Amino acid sequence: MLCDPWVNPAFFGSWFPFPDNTDLDWAHYGRAADYLYVSHLHRDHFDAENLRRTVRKDITVLLPAFATDELERELSALGFTKFLRAPSGTPVERDGLRIMITALTGPGDGPIGDSALSLDDGRTVLLNQNDAHPLDIAAIREFGEVDAYFVQFSGAIWYPMVYQLPLSAKKEFAARKRQGQFDRALRYIDAVEAKHVFPNAGPPCFLDDELFEHNGTGQDGESIFVDQLEFLRQLGRARPRVAAHLLLPGTVAEPEDTACKLTHRYTETEIEHIFGEKPAYLREFAGRQRAALAAERASRSPALPRERLLTELKQWWEPLLTRADRICAGVGGPARLDVGEVSIVIDFPAREVRLWDGERCRYTLSTSADLVATNIERREVDWSNSLLLSMRFTASRIGPYNEFLYVFFKCLSMERIEYVENYYDSCQDDGQDIVLDGWQVQRRCPHLRADLGRFGQIEGEVLTCTLHGWRYDLTTGRCLTADGHDIRASAVS
Image 1: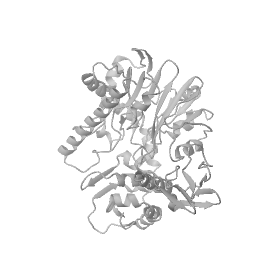
Image 2 (image 1 turned 60 degrees about the vertical axis):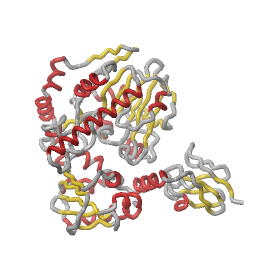
Image 3 (image 1 turned 90 degrees about the vertical axis):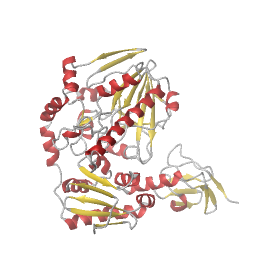
Image 4 (image 1 turned 30 degrees about the horizontal axis):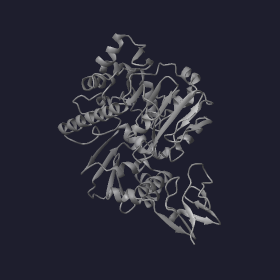
């Protein structure tokens, strides 16, 4: 099973896998694997170029039960045709394997969705958590006692590195973030109680000179990216009895009860060079990636003139703002986006995109004009999955972190806005029903949780949610569009 095969630079050429995995025989893995699992659409997990070039297209793809079908659409566009759709938290059996995918579908989960994979071949139970958290570990353990646990251990966010803060404050916030990351991993390790633990899903490394200072914990401790050995040393002090192992590109791990045989393709001297002489190793890695970095820079679109920039963003974002009631209320004020020399305001209360007029804004993001022009040309619906994770911007804010502003930049399509707005609405829903054209039905559509009082239409004995066309037989409550999405419904006498 091939899981999240990330090789190529991600997020405008900012993130690279650490250590270097480009010399692995990816074509062999792509031919030999029986299954492909992509946990979510973040580009350090969904590497479209590697999937297109090296993975055979008749492989069976495991699909998490996300609320939107964006992952399936992206994989289909690459040529994949064979999908196994796994209901969240429900084991399925194929080829002697028990497989379970636990899907997370909240606005803060990856790019509208993240997932974890459980596998059982009859001898070994494996849990690959990726970036997914929080998880119901008790429910996952019902699948089977875990032998091999792959846990996220390093940061995967831009905070606090991009913020305009005094160095002392940035160092303090980074130290808290690193400790918070470790504490979270430790809670999961304690809860899973696996026989063997493998630090996984991190960290990235930064090979562009503009970002090189963010590697590891940074030059002055102002970065959040701990590496595998740093985590293992800290874990050894906190939990000396946990059997944790170093996993590197090309490593073969063979867990067998309480023992685990590790075969690295690196010598001890090479491992010492990677971790003990990390700046030198990364400079060598950067030298091998000069062409890739140059190609990424050359692929960017030229800056747009001010009036065209404003027009493009207004035409794109203002229709989204008209539907983003919860997001606009949650942001609660204007946010400023500096695009090169042009300052744009996203006025959430007024649902308007306009030029900045000097007013006070609690949130300011500043970035280069070519990155914004590229996102506009590509109609990038998730700027967290391109611009923000690239760390090629600076930010300032007055007051605490605002989830709603971050979610807006993740939801630059009507499909995503509708889903998130309905998700927020449904969090307030206590199972209430509505009466619609002589029928009492549940208020929320089981698909994307749309308010059927707004989007429901009844013809005869069939209810259609007009948001995405899902249909329901009102006499039985059965969903006519997909299994497992029935509703409450009864005739009003």
